[in-house]
Image 1 (cartoon, helix red, strand yellow):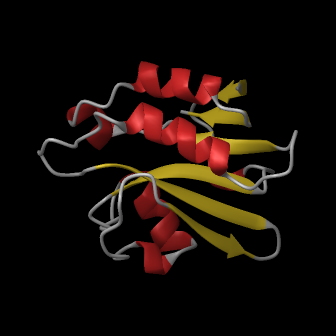
Image 2 (cartoon, rainbow, N blue to C red):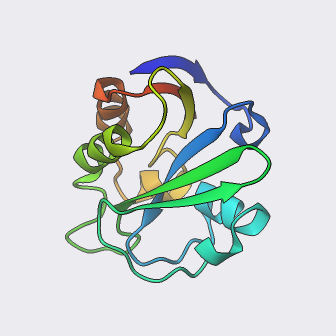
Amino acid sequence: MITKRYEGRDVLKSVFRHIVFGTNIQGCNISGFAGQVASKKWPELEECGAHELGTVLTKECPPNRAFHAIVCHSSEKDDIGWKHAPEIIEIALNALEIPDGEEIACVLMGGGYVGKAMGADTEAIKAAMERSNKKIVLYS
């Protein structure tokens, strides 16, 4: 469920231990929020190689931060696109091993320039986050 919403705030400056965001099946993360994380905190994510939809990549960043990248879309104009993103995001969020009741910061997947241009349904993605069993602080 979404417990709070922040627009225009920098999630990297948040107090939350867990930060969740989306990434593509191609494994090329040089733009969007995934690109920011790759350049600032997780360089291996930039060219991490192809992954299947639904895969969750996690990186612990001491002293007290964990990044979770949900592979939820294709960055190419193909049959995958963002079509299955809402259901993939909901399933992946529910599967995250995070203590019950702990709030997590989540970037609005598909809410950036590229996601919008590629047809991401951010309303369906927000609804999936709302249905999840995690307490989500949504950054958009």
